[in-house]
Length: 298
Image (cartoon, rainbow, N blue to C red; front, side, top):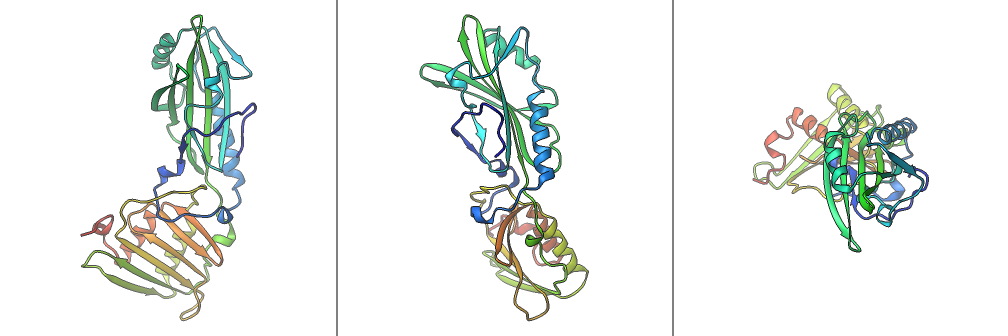
C-alpha cells in the first residue's frame, strides 16, 4: 500500500472499493494476488496527487504537519485495499465549523462530484465528512475518492483533514492468460430454473472459441481482498479450455450468470476477474443462456 507522509490511522470502516465492480460468492487468497501493474500504480499515484491539490479552501488557511485534533488522526472513513495509493494533508481554517460547511457547498473541490457525507461523535466532540469522486476516473483505476474530515477546534476555528485515496487494478500476467493456442472449450451450464436445468456446449477451433478466449483474457483483475458475496445466483457456467479435444483442461473459469465477476483458474493459479457480465453476454451470444436468466430463479 502506497502511503503519504505522516500517515497514522487504524481502519474504522472497511469500505471495499471493489464492491463497485460487483460481488461474487468466490474469494481469493493472498497467495493468488498478482503482481501490480506499474502503469496503473503510477496512474493511481498521479491521480491521488491531483485530488489532494483540488480543494478550494477559504483564506486565511494554514497547512500544518500533523493532525490539529485527535479526531483527525484518521479519516472519518476510508477505503481499505492492498492496491491503494493514499495521500493526505492537515489544515487549520479561520472559520467556525458552521461557516465552513456553508462555504464548502459553494466551493467544492475542482473536477469532482459529491459522493456522500456524514457525521459522528467521539468523546463528546463531533466530526463531519464529505466525500467526492472524480467525474471520469482514468483507465486502470478501480475507484477513487477525495475525503474531507473536519471538526471544531474552538476560538472560531475548524480543523480539516484532506485524504486522497485511489485503488488501482492489478495486472494480468502471462501466467494468468488462457493459451490462445487452445483448440477446444466445453461450457457446462447449471441452473435452478426448471426450464434450463443442465446444458453443455463444446467449441472447436474457430472464431467463437478465439472470441471467448480473447474476452476472458481482456478482463481486469479485482484488487485484493476481493468481493465478499453476490446477489442470489441461480445459474452458473463452468468453462474448461483444452489444448486439443479430449486433452486435460489447462484453464477454466466459473461464471455466475448475472454477477459482475468471474473466477478463473489457469494451471495452479486462481484469480478473480471484474466485468464478468461480459462473459454472460458472450454465452448469450452462443445461445447457451438467455437474458431472462440473469438473476432469475423462475
